[in-house]
Image (cartoon, rainbow, N blue to C red; front, top):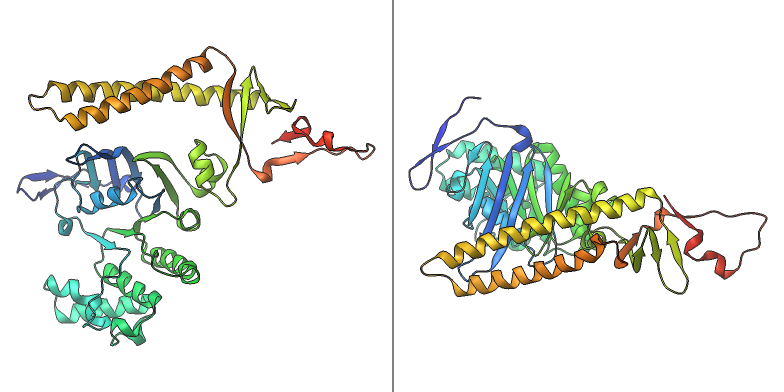
Length: 387
């Protein structure tokens, strides 16, 4: 595809890159900092493939909805670049990004029937009447709303109202569908039903979808890939299987999966885990390597983060009118990171240190000798082999 140009909202040209289907939506070092100095999203990097269903999941306040709103153009990006279908979209207004949004609230017009609610956006964009009718009826057919087209919202169930909200999005024929906790207002049984309906809709339309939820079950059952977030940072990106079987850290292990990973606190000393009460577990080479690699990566990441914060602090202090709140927040963050790095020195020196040891129930195996009579003491950790 050749390069083409589009206009930004300030009437400057935006140069588009050739479309790469593996980077249909691309976020490069996206940051969100509010005027009071609070940083909601930190260095968010992600490439989303065309037709992929990606779920942002994490606890309240982790930055997932803020990131979605930046993609939609409802929040300004403080730093970093956003590309949609090869077009740098930072300065584009929401209407020029060719995206469709579905929110937690249905936001239906109570005085309009289903047909008018679904077609209202097209009407505002001056679409011809015959095209509006065709698009609305096609959407109604896909969503199973054909018999409800002339009912008012008050005459619909919660699931039907949610389908109307979805219908309003799909008539747009958008490049990207953004969904911000669309099932939160529904009861548990209806949520399960709507999950499968949204996935079927995504597959039928062959769309690219970004979905936000705090419910890890929704993430695990709906996503092609999951982005796990906490405190504005991406914790891990991967398929549901990758994230469940190989969590990158304790937070991901405990947050994802039902049942979640069993986490045991113990002391690691020269390839041996000491659980107290003479319960020890000698690790094989695979686990020793995993331990060493984990702390090696932590060391690299901490150094990098400390350098970044020092640079931010230096820039802030060099300003004629420095933001005292921002300086305070950065100093607090730097102190916290340096404390963590000090603790890491014991690990690097090979001294005994506390770790959290996770065991999936399905990964515990016990080797039984049919000729032996077992007592309670035989079933302590030394007899457990982890695969």
